[in-house]
Image 1 (tube, rainbow over the protein chains, first blue to last red):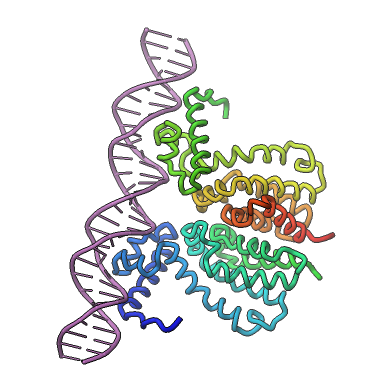
Image 2: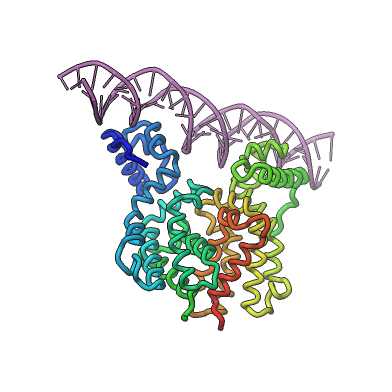
Length: 191
Length: 191
DNA sequence: CCGTCAAACGGAGTATCAGTCCGCTTTGTC
DNA sequence: GACAAAGCGGACTGATACTCCGTTTGACGG
């Protein structure tokens, strides 16, 4: 609970270097290109450092993903409408899908690499659980007659890196988001 | 196109042995336990044989999966209603989800291993494309106003090995199928 | 400014796999 | 039974995730 010692200066420097190296390798050569020795080499650190910091490959990608979705997470809990509390449920839901969709579209490669690395633990990941809880709550509020827990999983399952890559042509980068919003609307019905 | 030579007797024997070995390892120790040298050893063949026959790890799992879904595939194209042609679209769709759901529930581990191994190629897989085409056609027929192509991908995305494992408690083995049927029904609306 | 020590580091080492290669064996056929 | 083609085996390669431990570094009290 209490306070943790301040992170050592070299530790901070290295953590950043590793994340930036990961980003660079990811854009340069895709998910498979991000091997941990390459990351370490490019960041100018030893492999041990990478692992001490991030635990494993999945943790590294996870950290990067979280860095890129922190804003949405905050907006959803403390932000203003339509994302944050206060707005009508249906509107919040569509706004949330828009936000998550944009992140996913812009990070399809990272998302895919993360899914591969996570394997089964994807569902125990705090980030996943957060999105799931949020979605599930909104869905339950709007359609108490349906199985909100399942539907939340189902909607999140569509945020698949590989699928999004297929469904995101460069001339229409928001195609995926539009489609999933349409799907959610159909799911909620006209009411 | 013409005819291919009949498969040599030893080849048949080995192919079967490899598939059976894969099954056994899968149930014994899960997806990660199925390494190709283990499969080869248990089947009593060399690794080369496994690769010549199945191409790679994904191909091996794919073959097993296809073996276990061939029946549904046939029923969908040539079978009697409610799966086959002739029945009302909505009924065919629910019957199809029931069939695919049962296969998925019973083979969640295999499904998961296959997804891991396939990586991105999952979507180019003939089996995937077949299910997608079928679903897409049915959806387009029932709700021409929606994006059937996307919805078919979305529904198939929910057939995720890891998710199904989580959603399939032993005391209620059809939970997943029921939920996805409910979801499809909501999606199609009351009409 | 310096001594101390826990925290952090580096990178060689380990274990495990997917997938290849090529000399040898089996099978089907005439 | 001889021949060619199809198939076989398993050692080998290359890649990669992750570990281990001797060494270095930085924060901090004196």
